Image (cartoon, rainbow, N blue to C red; front, side, top):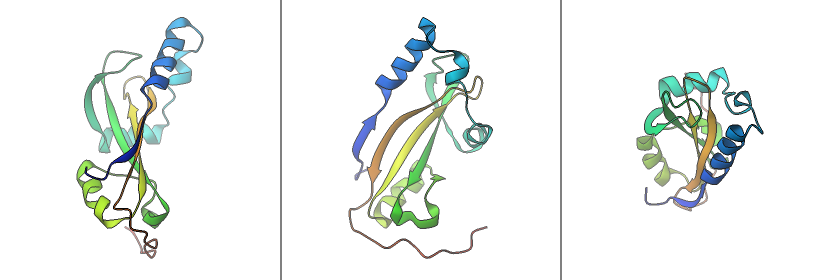
Length: 132
């Protein structure tokens, strides 16, 4: 994506969380607490990665991409695919994408990255339209 900027990688925080579990400072229930809605969203809308779950090592983690921004209006807070994001980056001035990884087996979930997308042109939020 040509307009990806302000990229923040949360790999160090993830590594610290996993290390604290293996050291016994935190329990697995602290990290494996995915909300049922998050798990369901990952099951039906997520993209399976090649990375194993850092907690159970039984399954590959699934990634979801949530979008948030004032210019998105009622579309803020929704899950979007890579194809949808590439279309949106030229339609909206600026919005933030949050990438969350989830293990469907044990419930591990962690914010893995965030970044800004958009063409930088300020726009008004779209009018509210009735959604299905």
